[in-house]
Image (cartoon, rainbow over the protein chains, first blue to last red):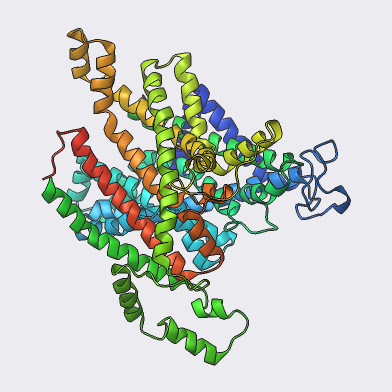
Length: 286
Length: 314
């Protein structure tokens, strides 16, 4: 119980520090808006995302359809709001996958060093040798394009970055005297890792996770734009943008709103990530 | 230096073997198999056996890998399932187009990113710095496909300008080629310039704090010499690393831009192969792109020694 209260206190402390900085405040509010939109999407969206108002195809934005309708007569506002939910879900799950794998591989490589380290890091070098979007597309092309495989692909693609970040932090923490003391009193490696190493590498890990979120959302949007990410009728900002390109000269709202939401989301996460890095690792602040 | 390059090239062998194994094994994960994909719903055991024999799929896995990789080493990437054309010559002709796009984009990125990054560092915490940092943040955050779509929309609505359709090689009609390539290069270049600006700013700021810069200034050197001869030269390594990584990534990863502007580069070739489930082409393209990516990273490492002679590789 005490640990949970401590963690909550730390999180509140970080948020307080964050909102002291104007950029941090902007990023925090931006991310908060996206989270609220995605959580409350079913309540906010006025129409069903698949409902087609065939008489109102390509209607311009107005009081009935806030962001207009698409070529099938679907409400663009509802689809954009649900798009936030899909983007955030893909972002969180895929970063969850890469963060978990990165933590396991990074801690193992950094703590045990030697052959284990060599094998893990050479494997990561191999994954690093592929441009990320290409590797993600390659994996999805093999597994089949759908939301689960998109999350798995993005998760795998981002794993090497987490592994490297965690490994570097573990190596630096491992050389501290308190770790030497813990080893000398006979604590088991698993206890040293869980009690003493992991809590001390959380700062760079959290910064990496926040920055990776925007990257994951961007990769998902790009993959969906290419038709290899989220599949219709599920709304994704990337696929909405791609589907609407044919109509953009006559119905520009079809591309403007999804584009604004993608830019707003990625920008908010990037600003938050930058500010979080300054708060958690002031040495990097320039 | 020569021994360093040879050692680095030798060290690449296990990485390249790993990459080829990785690509080969990922393709084994295809639900069903390649032949099922080709046959579709017309499942015919005789035809299946014929196709399996033709593609060597009736052989054990290690034999399939060995046959494939030994042919690749001789420059034979196989033939497309769909067109029956040889893959390697097609990759090479597409690669030239992607390389042109990449280098034009990298040039634009440096042209915007480096001077603005230096200016931002010199005017630290001023309004100029603020504006440049916002531009850089936008560069990093606005996805290429969103900015490309919005730019095309803007040009068509305001100026009634439509990007040219089709592709003409640079050595055929240079002026038409440049018309085709300039817009995608600008999109990619401005998008890349955000990170270059940020990296240049932080790198120059880091160097400006060093004692030797104070000494040079104390000796009365003009500010131009301090910035361009000392600060920028010493701060170039992370900038070169970033640009190198971006070039490596773009040589294979300009998929989205190539798709939007219908530029028949390597990215579009890979994407078309993915959509058509043409596995030998996917395999060949991904292997080639990964190889180029690794080689570009090696070149960047070698370039370090020229930029900073203090770096010696033992």
